[in-house]
Amino acid sequence: RASAQATLGTPKSRTVKFRTVNDFGFRGLDSDGSWRPGDSLEFSFSNPVAPRDLVRNLVIEPAVKIPDWNTEDDSATTDIFLSLPLKARTAYRVVLGADLADMFGNRLGKAVEKTFTTTDFPPVLSVPTGQGILEADGDLTLPVGLLNLDRLRVRMARVEPDDLVPLLQA
Image 1: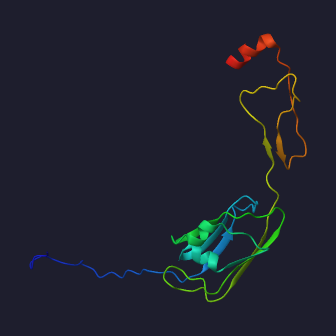
Image 2: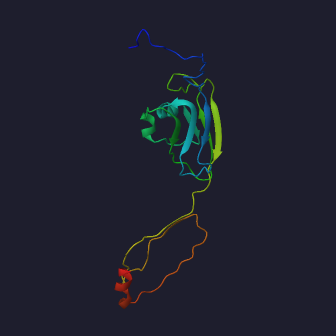
Image 3: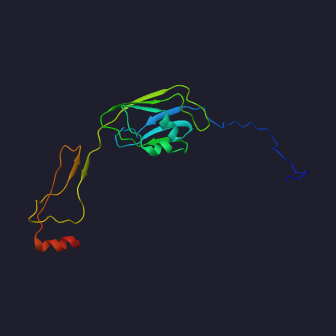
């Protein structure tokens, strides 16, 4: 509660300009610049949009199954990341519908179309790690997974029974 004798205000008048809401627009589509099939797609907007509203107004060609949790998420944000099961080396067309609205009810007003092409999956090698046993009278195979590797150099060595325990303790 201010006293009747208190000085209120400032000695000079000042003008302050601000906006409470931006003009609603689509700022862009990104994927860490790589467009790898396993990466998320980032949809960027000038005002917060709920993922469920984006999904309702989104067309992707060729068609991609959008995970169900995106259709229920109503937490609005300016940057929405969608993890989608994209195929490698595929050209995609993304269309945002004109009726897409931000959390304030502002609509895009016109459809927005973007295109991109995914790359290959990155090279991957998966090999069991840690201690393991191959039975001497078994098929002596070790499961190895490879994806997009042209060559692989392998070094192996036979371990003599007397050297096994010291090797495992090292």
